Image (tube, rainbow, N blue to C red; front, side, top):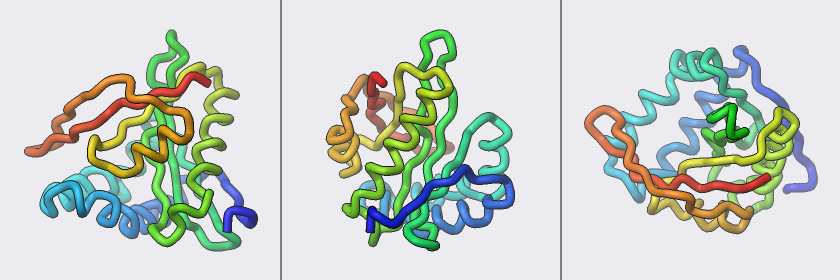
Length: 166
């Protein structure tokens, strides 16, 4: 599957597609590690079409990943600390049936190249401390830089901040 793919920058017209992909990936990603109510709450805060539009206005660049002509994943990134040349990978999600295919590696590598073009020396990302994706990020050269607990409404995101020197 990884051989026949392409990645393109998303536009505001792609917001409904991003929302749809998020709806297919969010619960399978977090359903086994967070309470159902928290998964639903966070999805509504982060992935409504209005919330996605706001994230674009705030500087997130979204990318869409296609296998053949089928959209199968997305990522977003933004500048985090300009003076330190740190960017943040805000999101990286693949449809569950595409995980393990090599496409996630293609997408994260694409993001790394894009942020380097924009002047980044470091790429950070957050991952839930119980998310199996932590091993994927380690395989891609990231290390746990620190832990942080982030309030989101009545809930907490218990994350590692993972970092890679580019």
